[in-house]
Amino acid sequence: MPAGGGRRRLPLRCRLCWLLCAFTLQLGQAEAPAPAEKRSVSASAPPCWLAEEFAVAEECAPCSHFQAKTTPECGSTGYVEKITCSSSKRNEFKSCRSALMEQRLFWKFEGAIVGVALVFACLVIIRQRQLDRKALEKVRKQIESI
Image 1 (tube, rainbow, N blue to C red):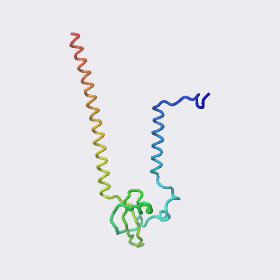
Image 2: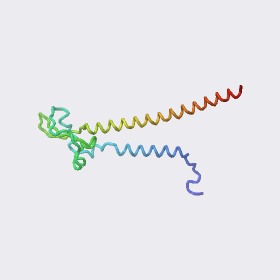
Image 3: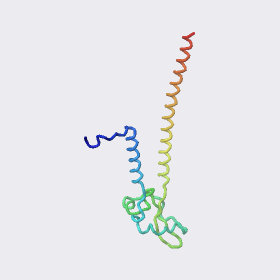
Image 4: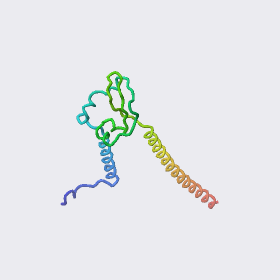
């Protein structure tokens, strides 16, 4: 008997479902934050801007290639601002959201919503035509039977 010859295979839709689930899990693992032991030492102490007043030394700007690799604050948004805490006088980086990034996200969202609306509008039109044809056929049959 060939290897696996006695096994039943899953239907195609089940295999596709499992493939989709595995792909989703892979994406979730790729976006998961780094474990605590892999984070830098500075991440273990809370940042000064959580407990103190601070002043922005440099406005929100995109991270450079070097900063993206070395500064953990660049990881979440890709933008950082340099701040100076008032009482401890420490300079630190803080993750921020730029107006340009927010605008891009907004227009991507708007585009997706318009796309979904167009798809459903087309589906409504197609369904309405089908129902109109069925109603017309019923009327024709009633007229022919008279």
